[in-house]
Length: 446
Image (cartoon, rainbow, N blue to C red; front, side):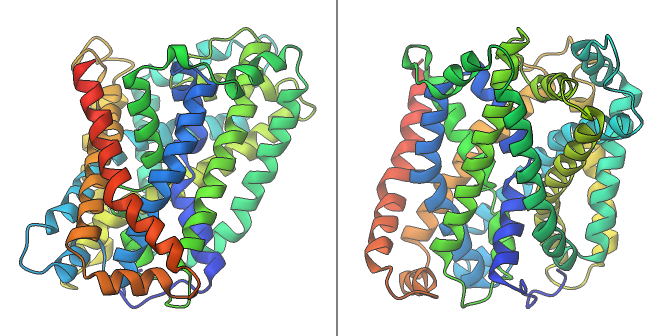
């Protein structure tokens, strides 16, 4: 991905790679526990509405900006709006991705450690107490540091050699496998005793428990899950061919993301209620429930190992896009070596991730605005910076970018989308910015 003229080899490759960037911790790890803490079915319904009405238009917008400019995030805004302050939208994306990656890599390290432990047969054991096991992992500075280091090392090694061909090729095989194993897990989860209570919790809307903070979480989750707001998809779409229909490609990414989120909920919550666990368990929900479910299956250790490996791949493909926007920003002028920038960036992210890694051990008593460093960074990125980034992108594409270029990019690949274009533009001009502003006002006045 060093050459800005590089392109995805196929439409399917681009869609799967974009889905790989979007489908990771947001859909598989974060969505279930945020849903559990925010009331279940009502939150899921609000999340779908935000994803379709705000997330999808935003994803289309980033695709248009990236392919229209054929540049990575910062250079794209410089090219489309020269000699203006709009370049700070791209810079916000780089800073946001840096902060996001600093705590995202901590969870990625947990996934990596769990995958290794599962392969070694150290997770599913007779009489195992999975909450205690997860607590041991996250409360050990040595284990969390090792996971954080190895996870970022894998990122740096891949990006040092370029990731387009490897990620695109791997996504064509591993993303479908991820769906298959998720469906296997859902089927097993739904056959557990008491599973129907978990299904009701997840799919039955109950709006009396919804707060303005929960709505803000749903909005932030719709951005987080689609990797929009920080211009990651601007960089990915800069390699997109002109014969790809952007609305259709973006719709497929959204459909796959919602489907994976639904599978995650159907896999987690029936098991939560079946085994008497707490749906508001928090970030550890996935790491506690998955081993519990797989331990009830024939060849459970094998299935858990395969699923964790696939989950690790999905996590890595998302983190690749986060690190790529940082690396590409500092290699855009061609004067810096990609491997050197990748190694330096990885080292800085590792150092920045140390406080989040220690949030459940040495820094567990340290609070920022009533939250651990891990949770405070998560809240800042997902619920504040991401919506701000989306608001700025919405204003940019409607009020600053050449509208003829916007329409041309929207209609390329299909000349039958004029009415859809008008709907999209209406959403970007009014609904997207107003929704973000209203949610912020509700949060500040609650």
